[in-house]
Length: 166
Image (cartoon, rainbow, N blue to C red; front, side):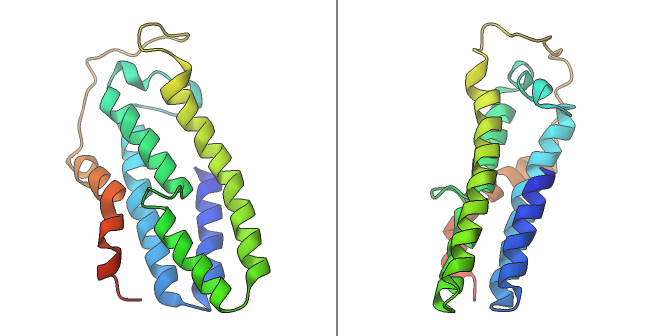
């Protein structure tokens, strides 16, 4: 997640001089998307990728939410994280900074690979019936109200794009 923050900050800094409103929107949406991820990782006591592969034993919904939020943070088109990147690329291309836009897309592919790896590990590597590591106890199932409110917001904020003034 540290590389993700550095990558997203790079996108924000690229746009800061050209369009500060888009830069502020980018960092705001990134904070909205990463807050539920960190809350879920804290709730499940996840510190490593090995721990992340066993989250389905405590909460299947948490595992699915983490996977969708990771893909959203990577900037895939149907998810929320694509909108700020598309607006930033549009701004860079309109300012005739095509080389910088191409470089930004290439660095985004590296982070996409990282997020796809995490999504693959937690969703497709271990089948729901067997596990290759120790399972977690089902008794620690604490739900945070903030996490419950932030997850749908982070996944479906794309529909509010026409309402955001640029």
